Image 1: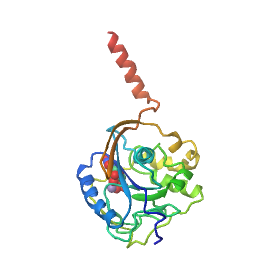
Image 2: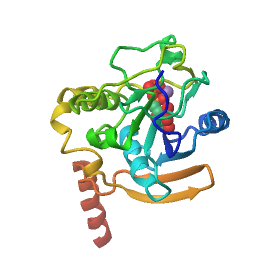
Image 3: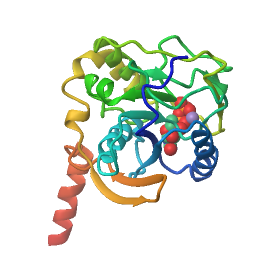
Image 4: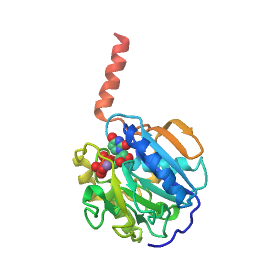
Length: 246
Ligand code: UDP
Ligand code: MN
């Protein structure tokens, strides 16, 4: 597999909520793994504060944005918390094209679930990331957001590269399988229409907390800040105001 563009300035971005044990194992395993590769890295744990609708892709966008206040990163590895690389030859760095790194996921029988799959672990240079306008912010619940990134990669004229299934083999930490959010799977059908109108250029959130040590930065974000309230929320607001006056 191709060598690193650079071993400097690699940001590992991990979307996170309520997976304490997995996060503990991930950090314990990935830090020595990266140190052995001589990579200059920083890990960003991006935690969603809301209970409802986990938004993996938006958390990735937030990680990209927040990395700017920590250092100068030229390579972003968007990484599920429950995947642990097993081959020392799976280099945690970027290629000029997006690099899908979790090719042999244990969950999919150590193979790709389908040819165009870019879920799990995906490495992108700043340049590639900006060409795609980052991830869509519209995916709440499980599924679809990675396929939308695949559409964006292709539309930007980029071509995903991959290590072999042996090099790209991942151990998968076990968890209860989320039910597919039907909205996400439907949204992918209109992915092309959103590329310029939804992404890193329209990202909106509120930073609630940020804790840094030498190797990791843990960020907590309110991802719904700045969104137009849904009808239900709006009615609740009216109800609350009325209650104040009676
Ligand atoms: N995730 C999380 N908490 C959740 C759901 C998802 O932290 O409640 C993060 C975590 O990094 C996880 C990734 O989002 O690895 C993808 O979600 P999940 O593992 O449920 O997807 P699957 O493995 O089924 O594709
Ligand atoms: Mn998982």
